[in-house]
Image (cartoon, chains in turn purple, green):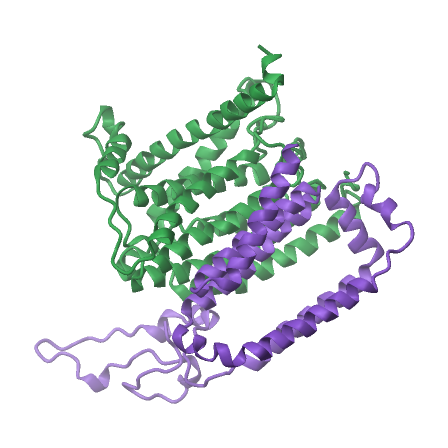
Length: 229
Length: 339
C-alpha cells in the first residue's frame, strides 16, 4: 500500500519535472528540474529493490554530471528572445523529426520479442541470498569482464581525445614547478651585502635570485621568468 | 508499551523519537561546536574568547541564535527569490539527513540500509548544490565566484574520497556501515591504511570547505564567498549546515578508520565505557583537529588546491587502492563475497 503510494508520488514528480525540464524558460531551472527528475528516478529504483543502482544514480548523475551541467548553464549568456524568434518557422521541421523518431520507437517496440524464460527471471532478478551490490559485481566483473574493460577503454579514449582537442600549451603561461623551488639552496637565493654607511647599495650591485637554468649566465637585475610563485 | 510500537501509529512515533534522539544531540553539538571553535582558536591565539554570556561564555551560542532570529532576512534586488531561500535549506537538510544511517552502537542506526556508505557518499556529494544555488541565486559576483570555486573544489576532492572509501570497502567486503565498524574489531583501519586515512581527512577538510581549503568563503578576497548576501536565519542555516557537515565528516572518519563505537584494544578498562561514548569521543577528537588545523595553517592558493587534489591525492589513492587489492589477493585475506 505504502509502496504503491510512494511509487505514484515518485512517478508523478518524475514525469512532471521531466516536462518542466523542456518547458522551463530559465535554463538553470531546467537543470534543477532535471536533478529533481534524477532523484525521483532513484526513488523508483529503490522501490524496485535496486538500492545500489539508486545510490549510484544519485552519486554519478546528481553528484557529478549535473553539477557540471549546472556549472556550464549558469555561465552561459543566452538571449531568450533571440532563441524564440524562429519558433514558428522551425516548428514543422521539429515536428517532422519528432514524428520520425516516434515512428522508429514504435517500430522497435512492435518488433520487440521477449526471450523465453525471461519472465521467470523477473520474479527473482537476483540469485537467492545475494545482495544487489554483490549480484551486480558478480555480473560485471566475473561474467562480463571483457565487455566491462572494453567500455572502460572507450571512455579512456574519449577522455584523452577531449584533452588532446582542448589542451593548448601556451608558452606564455607561468607554471609553478614545486620541485625546482624546493631544489633551491640558500646560497643561490640569498646574498649578504655589506652596505657602506650613507651610500647604500647601488641598484646594479643587487642581484635578484636567478632561475636555475640561467644561473650559468649572470644577468643582473633581470626580471626572472617562468618562476611565478 | 512494546506492542504499541508494533502498530502502524507506534512505528511512526518510534521513527520520530529515533530521529529526535539523533538530531537533538547533533544540533546541541553544533551549537557548542561554534563555541568550542571560538574558545580553541582564542586559546591558540592567546586570547580569552567568548566569556561574557553565561558561565565562561557557555550561553554564547544561544545568544547568537537569538540574535539571528531577530534579524531581518534581506533578499537582494535581482535575486532569484525561490532559489535564494531554497539554498540554505538544502544545505541544512542535507547535513541532517545523512545522519539517518550513522550507527552509534552495534545496530543503533535510524535506517539500517545495506548501502549505507554509498548513501553517505551520495549525500555528501549533494552538498555542493546548496552552495552553487546560493551563489547563483544571489545575483552577486562575489557569491558567484565563491560558488564556482566551491563546485570545482568539491567535485575534485570527492574523487579521492571515493577511492579511499573503495579501499576501505575492499578490506570489509560490505557496504553496510555496521559491518564496516565490526570489521575493525581486530585492528582499526587507520593503521594498515594510514596514507588513506590522511588523504581522507584532508579531503574531508576540502569537502566541508574548512580552512585551509576555505576558498569558497575567502573573506580576504571574495568577502564571504557564496553567502555574502545572506543574513539572519538564512545565514544561520548555512552556518549550522557547515558545522553539521564537519560533525558528519568526523563521524565518517571515525566509522571508516577509527573503529566507530569500538573501544580501543577491547580489554577491561576501555570496555567499561559504552560504545556511543567512544563514538562521541572519536568524533570530538576529529572536530578538535578540524579546529586546530584552522588555527594553524594559512589558506591554500587556488591552483595549489587543484594540484593537491588532482596531482597528489588522486594518483596516491588510486595507487593505494590497487596495492590494497593486490595485498588482499596475494595474502588471501580478501573477505570472501560477504553476501
